[in-house]
Length: 223
Image 1 (cartoon, helix red, strand yellow):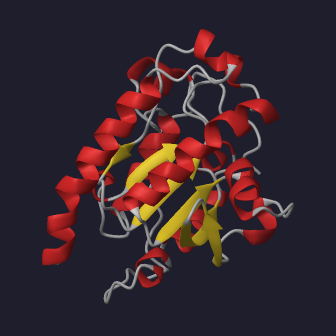
Image 2: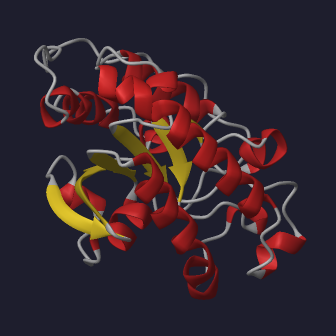
Image 3: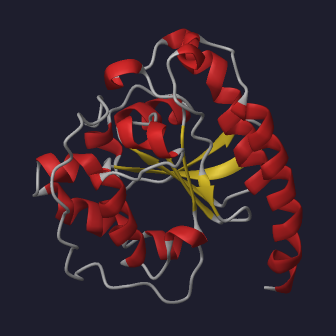
């Protein structure tokens, strides 16, 4: 525990410097339509990182990831395994919102993915949990969809870091298909053991009630 405490300021300073650098990114056309870069938020030395697809309407306005209805559900799921949003790192593959929440384009992914890999190198998480189809396929490097691979961990190299990749359904999927909430809660219940925590919550714990459906369209490719 002492070692982690000494690493946090160093990681935080490095992430702050990198965030300032990324805030002015003009590598792709999304820089022309964004309100601001959504870098990510959480603990700079987090053992657990969540990675989604791209910022949505609310994220683009507030500059923080997962702040809409899906974000509220993600927060409840994180609390359900004994953690807080402040204990993990949350971000997206893309740091700028695609107009109308359209699918990211290949050139946008190519321009932005090195930002994510640098975040992983700086934070050094043990587990990277991908949220939804897009992030899962991109970071696993495999075509298998989230319906097939959710809850199945695998070791991968992202940038220069070796991590445990753990695919999860996107929380927005549970907003539109409530039965998926039980699947999400069950998959989340395995995270403490993957992180090496001694005490894990029971997989049969009641799933959190989903928040109201978002007014803005959710990101595509959730399933």
